[in-house]
Image: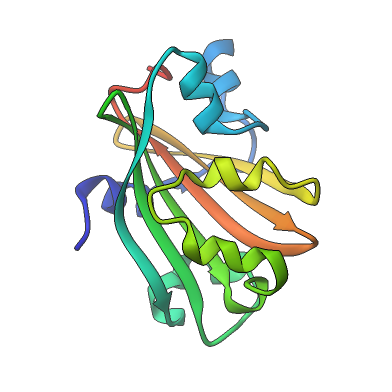
Length: 165
């Protein structure tokens, strides 16, 4: 199963430099903290609609391979992050199998728990970069994050109902 928002997320084209956007849009796109927390600060109840979760081969994550270690399998999680049941964000997380050791094995068991609830409780979380992208008037971003030095790639597409617009 897939969702049109995830097709559009995969179509994002990334800028080499931060684009000229208004300060409020940049505040959303360059947020270093949890997007789940930011949505809750808007007074919303945040839930996850799980679209897809499981191991995939390299062909399923071909666009992300240049940003991650080459492995035979990756944990792929695709979701819609909803605020009061309205989709505000589509998310795609690609995790190399080698990242899923030690406490990070919990990434496979998130189910309907927002990724931010797990990531931003870890004292070992670091972010290598945030890249801003756009497709058909919708903005998104991707970040390579590290837990205990182990990488994962998170791509987010802000949907039309989100306060970014």
